[in-house]
Length: 478
Ligand code: NAD
Image (cartoon, rainbow, N blue to C red; front, side, top):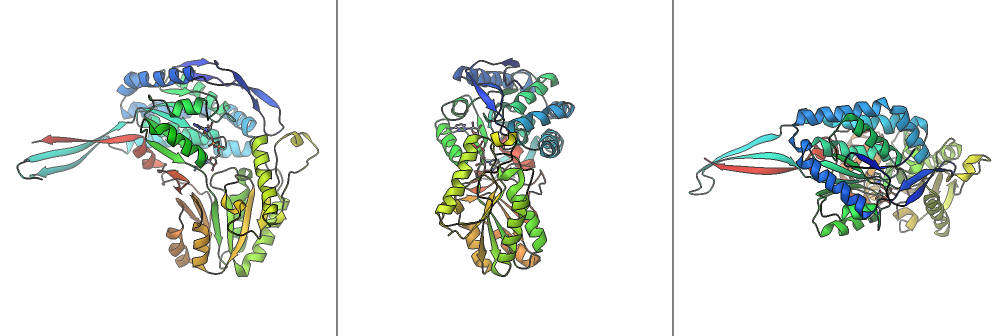
């Protein structure tokens, strides 16, 4: 796969190349061009020109039709997208072909559909004599695009998460410059091919490759020609982008990190809770922002739950690698830190040996820890690997206090058969999403996002359309 920038309808590879490494076996997949400031400038200028040109003149139905053509184009190249995502991330073909690529198609279709259900002008009020002497007025609201949107995306769900922003941004009539993660540039390049072949006007969608700090990501998010930033990634990166965007007061939508809790009550279906926690902790080797890293279990079932979870973790086979050598080293450094902080390692705790090519890849063992105090860094900081810490609790209030004592607030999971308890506890957990007896069950129309250091704003359905368009009030004196 050849990574290329896509700027104003043209593919180009200017900028010093850096190697793209396969996490599955450490082999070199190809080279990625590092976008210079000039490439980023060109992309923003092209996006601005397209906004003023044919794209800005299209009606909602025509934009919806364009989104559908892109969805069809991804579907037509389904296998290429799957192979590109598998090579860049080391994930399984099954995951890429049942989650990543279908969701990318779904993202474009869903926002095309939503455009039909949304009036572009909503009549609000007709006010007789609201203030003395003002007479009667008609107020109505028009929604208009924000302009040039910078999308900066992470490596963990490259195509799924970038299209989750690109589709609603385009639906609302914006133009887009995407800066995908430097670790996973391939599906972004393929998406540019699809958009190109779909015949969208030049400059409506642009891709610039490269790193974040001091590079393409920073050039783009600090660019005066960018009207809004939609970012998914680490909370610390969000803070850096916010500082960089402050001079231009650029509106931001942030989906950031997490340290997600699961609460297992003694009345839970324990088999379902163990199954669910295996999924929520170890899916994609823990490299999903929604993955569980803290499990609190009511004391009567604590030992049985921990034993069963540890057994399942030890028996896991066929799991994927960490995205890079650097990330593998980071996760392993937390495994060492956990021991130094006094953890009992009940499963995993190191790097596996396979005796084949995978030993050149970046794997870590699925790991279950117990025995740490809540103040331990291992319990407080996001690790983003296949690991959780399990701790006991005695009362519902204590469980809530433990779950909420975190700088993060993305997602949580409750396991209980008591309906009243579920309704009582769910609204009190300080996370943007609370799952009850399930995990990662997603309806794309529901609000998605985090509280505290886990994000700003909500995406999903109407919530995305609200961010990517601006309500403008028109007041006419009658
Ligand atoms: P990251 O923050 O390291 O990088 C994300 C993107 O930001 C990359 O494209 C990177 O090049 C760019 N970037 C880095 N520094 C930058 C800077 N100073 N200015 C501009 N751009 C910059 O995140 P990652 O390691 O790719 O992804 C993992 C993180 O993402 C985890 O913290 C995870 O929880 C989070 N995440 C959150 C969600 C969510 O929906 N809340 C979803 C997925 C991942």
